[in-house]
Length: 296
Ligand code: ZN
Image 1 (cartoon, rainbow, N blue to C red):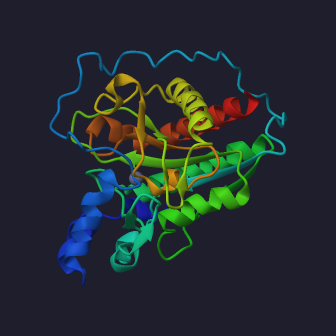
Image 2 (cartoon, rainbow, N blue to C red):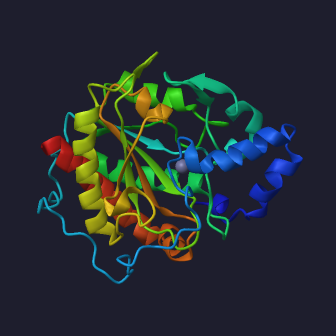
């Protein structure tokens, strides 16, 4: 949204060389794939699988659940936290977001810049846009919705604060919204589920099972609404990965998943991610996935 969307890619490319903490800047940039931004880019050179024809219809929606009619408030009384991954201003605060925070299993940097399309559309702008669209749809169904940030902060929040936001709200569901930074040909979306962790401040025992249910509904409805398919480069075609290295999941005490909506570095996926109409469909998919989970 706004002029930030058109900020040229060179802003990012210049970040590492000119930042006072140049080395940290490089780390931040590289971490966009594997930090709390998700799993993309681990195998950037890997060709897509043969079953990944873009013309194939989206996965059938196994729930067959109808969207709520206008005026219905099926989510009244529910509290939902949406976590727009990264922050458009993180790029200007490399030192601050590089400080380490405790995620239970180890110490990890506060936040990352996130990735961007080759045309310069930042992941942080994408995630904020989709989160705002999703918030509007959820509120229309009666839910109380909070965002972990709404673009007004100088940077962050840090990944431990993002988890704490859901915990403090006593959220019925939390979804962290991201887009990935894999190689060309790596396509599709995937949902990241919390793995079993019990160490330090991290204890996911109570959320592993409900988070999987949330993830399954999210996957089904996201595919149905967007026409996108499960990732051809992560999760062996299942659309799921389980991770124990994400602070946003490790520290959550309420059901929570991440969704990587597509690969910003693939031209075809980028066409979707930069299309406002597609982002609205993505918001519908996320909304319906959350709604199905809460109705379950
Ligand atoms: Zn991300």
